[in-house]
Length: 476
Image (cartoon, rainbow, N blue to C red; front, side, top):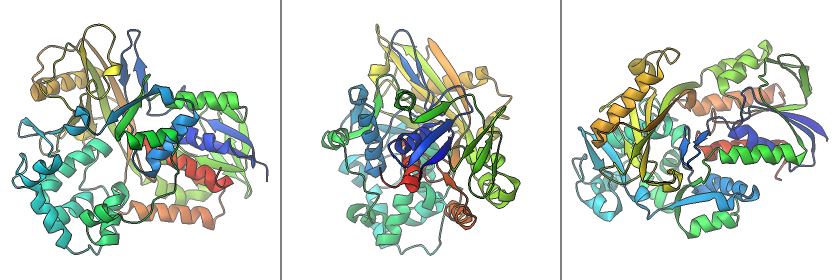
């Protein structure tokens, strides 16, 4: 059955959907519609003349698991293997991660010694929490906040400090509101399958998707990579995908083409653009949930309502460059629990994992300060009104007080990422179930992809694009 598929949204999820669709003979035409002037969504890198690279969005991708292999397989298919910058598990950036608690940096416990001894900021050895965890009975609820789940299984201190910080680092979110089932499915599944997180991790908690590894993915496993980036920054990945789409001849690529509205006649879609309409037999929507809700016809009001309930947060990302080597410690970076400083999520020491992104010439230190998230409004006010200068001052001040760096930065850039990370609150899984049920019940030729639904990491979003494409045309 030859058909036209429209992919809405040219972020990494939409590009991934096009990449997989374009391999299938079942689709005669693929149209990619992106409202912005560039593709790649939050994957955005600044490349300076002197060789320095700064990331304004995600900065390292984990190779682990099926979704990690899937991304590396795509990187290999795009011919980017020689561009990959791997960071192994025995690299200082992987071994040393810090928490900023009580006005000072504490190295996160690692290795056996860190587990059996009491390591500040914790008041007792982690091994005590771990041994007790195995004996705690399963929870009865269908869903639970991350904080409640970890408190129940591992104690409130770990939840208040480590898990609070982790949820701020990954989701820029509040672990007291985020769903454990949707945000940390391995923990939820481990308890379900084995009655214990620890046992679930040791024994496994069920099979994941089957993704055979490419040569590159095998290399990542053999060399024990913890994360990787690309020589020209992660924006290189969407650029390579866009180039593949344009040169492959199967995908009609449109940017600066926002979708104004959608209407359906029962069999397909009419997509209203600013000055024309496009017909499609099926839509893969890789837009943010709220953007899709606004475009859907009024007849699909119950679906729009569910989509609108998926909240997002705004994050300020401030890239700073300092002359010389200014860090008092080396490692990946440090996270800050909400009890310490609500507005400041963490600082990444970019020069440590990826020195290749430093300028050529004398030594420099590149740092990224992440701020806001679930606390943005409370700390900085309305994102529409906050100034870059305020955010820059706040970031530089944090580097001074947390890391003792007194020199001013020699270069900086402020990026305000509005509504960049969806928040999977309690019951998110049920909302997804309801939305997908609605789509089936009403025979809507619509697939959902992107970060609003099944995971916010780059790997998850790329995999969601693949899943949507294969749901339509089968495995390709």
